[in-house]
Length: 388
Image 1 (spheres, rainbow, N blue to C red):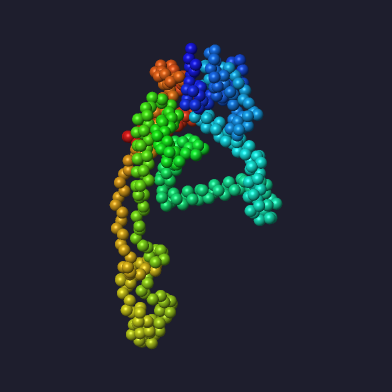
Image 2: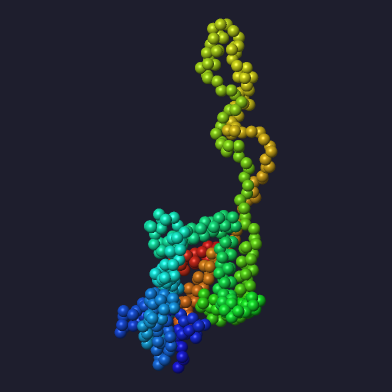
């Protein structure tokens, strides 16, 4: 008999046991839906450590006083937790871990130090926990401000690709750097070890993301270089800047006016004409010279307010028409990957065997969460829209 028929142990998953979900337990139905990890396998059953977010956070903090409960379960009573369940469990563990840190003596000490930097009236209204929370909020607001400024200057896509590249390289090389620093190795040897182990570690990341285990070292190396080249192309390609528009009028106003014709009170002009006619004078005797010499056709041209006939500024021709960009972009690639992962989950059994039985596929479809079906529909629409 296999020592791990369902591949739930750490030895079958690169040293990291998957998060399992308990189901189909008729003897103790209250256990259905709980999460845990397989510890060993013997006599046809897995020994599973049932975990809660509180227990996992306490154990992650190094406190071994709290122990999970252990159960012996058949392989049919276990299934790998979905990505959403893993994300939800990880968020709960992070929340409880943060609560444990806030209640710790180290957090109290740091909070007291932050309070000592504040004015005395403000110190009386704070506690060390509130001071820590306020400092975290200030740091997050500053990060958001810097990100917004850099996004407007460099571009959101470049910032996203750059941060993703840093996160990927850090995830791949961090074990070698941590081990090398602890061992006191020279930086040259640490960097060499990280470069040698990078394809293997990247291969493990691909297996965890896709669930596809038949990835060779050369394939992982090629994919890693392709991703680095693609990221470099995005980072070094200059961003398209909006075309500089022609300078507007000095004050930017477009309200029409007649600048050359002097403005006089019509009643006064009418009165001057009346007086000339009454006195027997020629037409226009009392009228101002500016009005008599004004050309009604030329001078009534509507011009912008504040307009000056100046040709000192450079003329910028209108930009060329924008070319239609390809719809096969990052979102389409992510949609294709989502459809691939969705299809793989439908036709692959928990032990990695390909199953094309229609009854099996329909059973898997009925058990899929509604949010995953909605995500599949949006991904399918995005792919079809990109090629049609």
